[in-house]
Length: 419
Ligand code: UD1
View 1 (cartoon, helix red, strand yellow):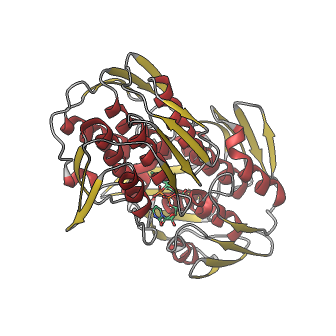
View 2 (tube, protein in one colour; view 1 turned 60 degrees about the vertical axis):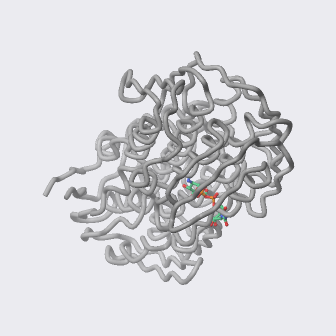
View 3 (cartoon, protein in one colour; view 1 turned 90 degrees about the vertical axis):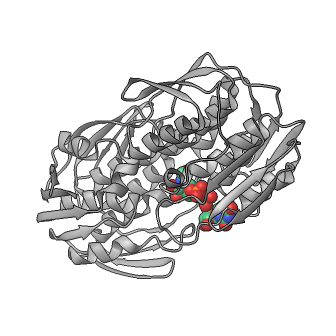
């Protein structure tokens, strides 16, 4: 078992290089199944979700060569099975992208229900609705999804709910379909645009990604022989921006797209922090206790749910009482119990939490309940007085490359210890 041991308080100062976006990369990898050829993908985050995605693709027949720790060459010419390995697909959420991609490529797939962070109910009815509208038959039996189609035909798909996963999955199933698919009420996250850009680079015809109407004109095939670099990770950048504010530090994030960070920037300024936008880098600093604020998580361009726990640390230390309303996931406040062990005063009920700001947090043993909660606890450990031990690191390692090295580089006293 491994744990992170953080001793604080530390004011974080220095530069952090932001990696490729996990949520784009976990969709781009299955999207390579649509290509009857070879391509190179750069700026992949070196995290466990990516390693497992690559293992799944290899089990389906793809050949993967690691060029360096963030670049692969992938050859998807020979897909040899339509059964995805259940033990691997159950390990993370984005394994559902195998369905859209394999329906397009092979017309058939058998895959286990996706795993991932336990954030409350995570239905996939909108994915299934989209596949069925395009002509697939989908059944779910004893935790396994069976999907098949003789021919996928483009059509209008109205999403009843704004869903990142369903938008990308329907896009994957529509790229090689006959005719035009129009996704209405689509999600607009930067990773959706990135997946569309990747597919278009390979010969797809997708327009409107980043707006709520996406039009996909089906093409006969996608060519390989191209190199694509994954977009910088909005959530990793936001995590370090909020770490800078929580620790009253001064941190510059290199290799980020500042436009993707506008909702976070606006909130940081509202609570008294400072943000300097330099185009492909952003400097965040804070020299006083942050002010209270109210937050409601929303689909992009609203405040992202994946930064809600990190913002929770900042508000638990703010001057005054703040309220967070979580509108996407029903169980995203599990981290508040851990923060209360460290001296925070948070009352969470359902989708609302009230943060009565305290002046200091104190080190304690804490357990990461999910990926972003884990990142938030690393920030909490850095700002807290004394030593914090963080357990359940497998969640953090699913989504952050070398989290402790990046925090250490900007001054945190943090070690990974094997027990
Ligand atoms: C993705 C992100 C996750 C992020 C979330 C919201 C990936 C791999 N994960 O998850 O980190 O927290 O977006 O920004 O990109 N819903 C349905 N039916 C569906 C699909 C979704 O009711 O078929 C609901 C969900 O329960 C949730 C909301 O829609 O309440 C948004 O979910 P969705 O955007 O689909 O999240 P994910 O794609 O799973």
